[in-house]
Image 1: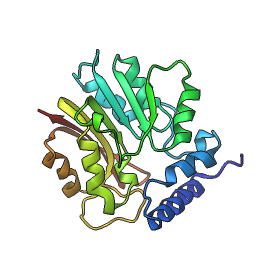
Image 2: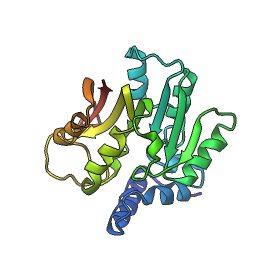
Image 3: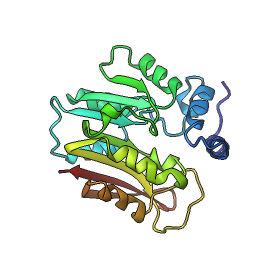
Image 4: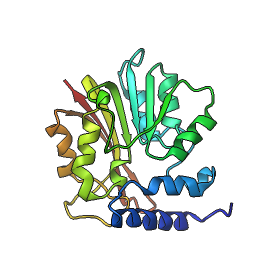
Length: 225
């Protein structure tokens, strides 16, 4: 397949996301993107084929006990984060709304013990409520528009079990004004909704990216007592 340049890929993402938004199907564009990629990971802008570095950084510094604990990876993409967690001894479930992405995971890791599933963040199984010791949410909330932000945060937050941990990795904006997206970076007011759901912020790491260091990224650890 003709390899698109990075800016062309970003433009395609914005076009697909805005089309889905107009169709009142804010997450519908993910399947289109993965399908169009035709198993070429370079056409999926967030697919790095390795664990997210901020998640790895948290794991390196964390005292989280992994043996026999359950973990859920939200919007797992091509599966690298899920596979890394499985190697640490966690019992991992990973889902994505894109059937193409999930099939891609299974092809990449044919012997995997990760439970890969197609699921919709807005219609998750009720058996998942407060069911996971570790929930990992990396840049999915920011990929969905502000008009579903509260619903999205609630869907993620309710997955965390008692004495469980939530990791949120996201872009951050220092204003409540609506940003031009995607991605739609999260504000402090939006992040506060996790605490309203009974999740206490335990640790926050700030990362600054970009040639002009203009993009602020956060890795936040929450805990449900």
